[in-house]
Structure formats: C-alpha cells, structure tokens
Length: 210
Image (cartoon, rainbow, N blue to C red):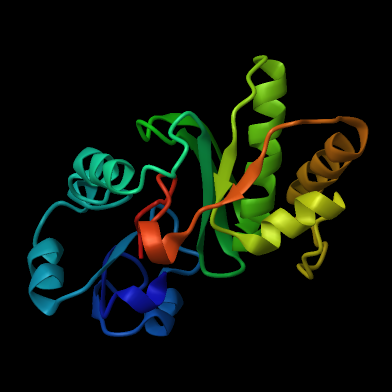
C-alpha cells in the first residue's frame, strides 16, 4: 500500500513535515503517541493537507462512502453482506491496531489496539475476532481480508510471526494464544475470502493512512 503514494505528511511525529518515501516517514512516526500522518499521490495534495487540521485526513479516505459505493457497484462479484477486516501498524513492529467493518456500509463492528505488534499479527487477529464475533452474535456471513499470510495462519490455526516475546509484547502474545485456542476448539462455516486489492481498490476496513 505504501508504494501507491509518493508523499507522506506527518502532522504529529518526531519531525513533522512532508516526506518523499515511506521509509523516512516510518522513522519519524515510530514510537510517537497520538501520531498523525497520511500518504498522498501528489505534492500539491500533501502541501494542502499539511496546512489543514490533521483530523480532516487522519484515518479517513476523503469521500469514503462515495468510494465504497462506487467500488461495490463496479464489482458486483463482491459479497456486500459480509465483514471486511484489516490492520495498520505505525512501524513494523510498532503500534498496531485492527478493525472489522460491514462491507456494504463501512461501518465499524469492532476494533483493537496494541502498543507493539506487526501488521501480519493484526491481520490474523482481525480474522479470528470476526469469526468469534459472528459466533457470539449468531451470524454467518463471509469475511474479507487482503492478507494471504493471515488466511494461511488461520487455516493452520497458528500465528507464525517471528516477533519475539518480551515484556512489551507479552499482553499481545496472550491474545494470540487465545486466538489460536479459539481456532482449535471452535468450528466455523464462514468463508474467508481474499479481497482483490489490485482490482477493487483498498478493502473497506483499510485505515487509509498510507
């Protein structure tokens, strides 16, 4: 996703400003609390956004509802009665969060945030959370993810991340263990489907930050 943007605005980071590559952006947002940043395709867009309130842009994709409506109408093969999940990470590893939304509307169903994690772990936990949520609420609809790695981990019932277990990641590893145990002790019939980003654009659960 980072490769689609050429300019990165950091409103609140180690060194606020406009950066021309994702690697430099990452260095200046890692470890920052209340970080605010986003990627843009043109310098004009980035300069204009930098002068504006970051809350107009942070976590938002502009006219999100219109974009989602256009995507769903353009690709009738997308199952609208479904959940979409995605994760975001400020640095990798870094502050990690994931969320699940209703595909048809983009409305948020659940969200979780961790002080240290990786994007792949977030994608994995998001799928398991979506499965557990559906079981709890007696729902049976497909789940979209844009992560093939997370799909494989769910299938094998094992998070295969190489993130080390440390005091900072202990709480995250406890959640991972619960997710793995859930997969081993529960059955489900929901289809876990690959969101085709290259064809359809960003998944409805995307955080829109880079």
